[in-house]
Image (cartoon, rainbow, N blue to C red):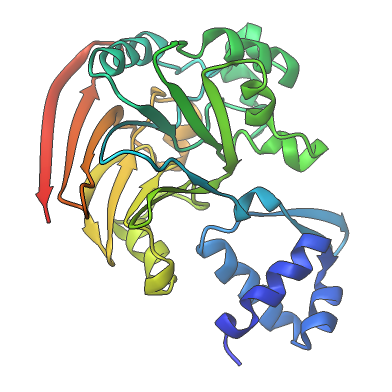
Length: 319
């Protein structure tokens, strides 16, 4: 039997929590097969928590926020802002540029903003991380206060955010969802889920937002292609927005229109070691959904680190 036949049963087991042994017993599969299926599940955007209980023993649980689908039905036309990887608290944060972009979003009358993860820089992500943090954002409680205070605020629209791998470090230690705690204190922020969420704009158009795991791919489009290739056609969203990659890209692949949502973090020693070269900026996406999808128009606001937006590029796709 292949992975798809075990998919739902594996989800059910993870919701209850279990070790490799319990997963193998419940599904009657080998440990090697269990490891393979868990890897394939993560490739599909299902982010489960993994805790080490001792030498050679791990405990897996599924954050049930992954099952949530959010509906924003009711309009034929949408104007959506897209951002990601703002990394507030990092010494490389680009708050002035982010504030400038949000001013443009207000001027452009967007309906809402989608944030594809890592609203914060997290804490203790790597050895020496605190040396590359803003002092008032060191420690989870101080970081939470910092993000609540500093993230761009507006009464014109809401920012709907998933968590990223830096944000979820707190959950892996304590079970507390950092972005959810931040959103409780801000009327203009709403938490969508842990590293993944699906949004339905009407019965015929869906958007997946994902903060995928892993290092930077060898080629720019590879991460989107592999992530989508592992999904059934019926499970692919009309649009897929990727965070984590710190890159800007718009196009179509594997049956989905894709956006790499960019970043608002300058170069840090950690990014240099990872070989990540940040492309700073954000998007405005206009959708005409009257009767069916008529047009996707993307407008890119690209920033040089430490300066105002340098250009605007547009990509229009008519169906």
